[in-house]
Image (cartoon, rainbow, N blue to C red; front, side, top):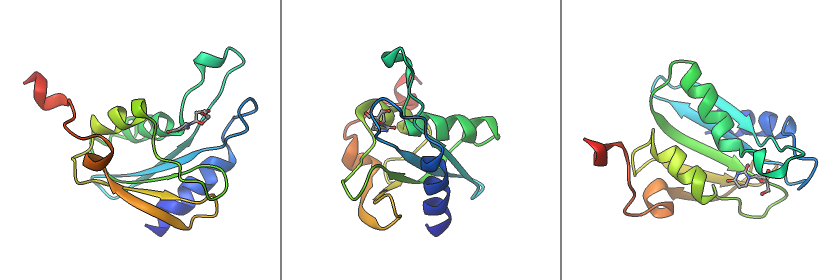
Length: 130
Ligand code: THU
């Protein structure tokens, strides 16, 4: 998990969040063990900004990854920063319900670990469309 934490910290340092000043870093492991990270990127037209998690997912998919196997998220300070509702669904597209989502302080200390199923129970996913 240490590699994910370090990647999330680096991504958080590059987040573009001049409006909320709430800097988020996310890092995700793919099925090959590779780590992909991203930060939130806000926009002067506020609704056009996006979260850290889709930044990381975008890197994972564009690197050829197809599955998310572990996630680290960190926000400001030591407040618990879980993925928002929309991000939970975006993670769901590529992750099984037992995938661990580690929520850390901005310094990388673990606050709490959830499974995706805990954060998004009874979810709708790709299987529903088969
Ligand atoms: N944010 C994320 O990047 N991920 C989340 O799951 C929660 C919220 C960002 C969006 C916005 O740039 C800032 O945090 C404040 O909401």
